[in-house]
Length: 404
Image (cartoon, rainbow, N blue to C red):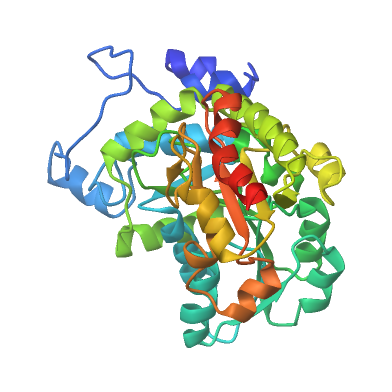
């Protein structure tokens, strides 16, 4: 057992912050302190017999970086440890993780229940692509467990949700929905992108699989694209890894290394994101140009109590509706000077976007209406800047609306 193995063993029960810095690393003969980047497509074998054994999975080791790479494996092991999962497979993007899971677990005739408030690309993936392959999809309100129960059919094989949702920050009762999935002998898949394991561990609440867009908070600085699937079920892992080996939606070693560096500061950053988001949400709530604020940290949020029970913080996403419509929302966005107008989130820099015409612009109007994605809705991914500066920047446009 290496020093890192011993330090992160179950017996020692290290805290999440320690796992984020130490877990998964196996130092090589160079005795490196920081994790190296293995920028190689392939690996050399000692002899033909070893090559055959590795290719036939009779021996563990590196074969080809499409599915075995030491840097990627370190990221997988670290994220898996943080989520409390036994298995993690990294992917080229968060959407690749979701698509891969569906491809390796579902077949024509199967049925999926999904949250109505999913990220727009996820809804498109289920609604526009997988339905072509005779996989039925039913959308339900994420915060109503009985709606999930009512939507389950004999053919239901998967329940899929985000919590908090994007962009209205609705909260799903993971444990209650996990019980429903268990009764139906279906998988519960939770997209943990908004909370990360620093704030929420869905596997501990009964979920079967956690998926991530590592592009967001796990990176934390908007540098790279990647994703991951985490589970405790060896059958799910084996099926997913088999798809990865064959289809190859692989995470690059460089991106994996960047995400490793992001994980080291994840808990610190998430705490600051939460603090700043709480300040911004409270300030927005008192502004006369704001119609409604969506943030689970506010006492009047419908999911406030539930979020307090199953999360260790309320997250860094704040959405709000201005008084008016698209014109007014766009004018507030365009008046900002500090905030970045971009669809990405989870960045150290605060970002602002108009969901109805961007992140959720490719789903139908009916789907937007059902999910509450109105023309006057603005989403803020609250960054690490001074909170007063963020409020001041938004005040430019909001104050102008009041003055009209």
